[in-house]
Amino acid sequence: MGNNKTCGSAGDAVYGLGFVGAAIYFVSTATGFWVGVLGILKAIVWPAYLVYLAFQQLL
Image (cartoon, rainbow, N blue to C red; front, side, top):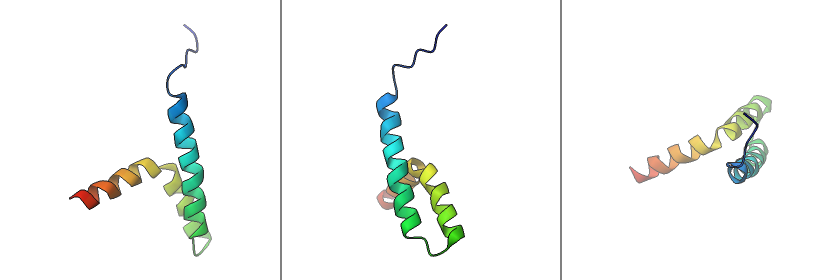
């Protein structure tokens, strides 16, 4: 079949920009090297983290 990727490009761009922004935020607020590494890991899963915190505030 082919490599037909017509959907998701905008979502990929939003996720990419969100990753960069989250990584900058988490790393800039880190107090040490390993906290910075944890910040990078948090930046990878920022949508799940955001939804978790939003649900936490709603309940």
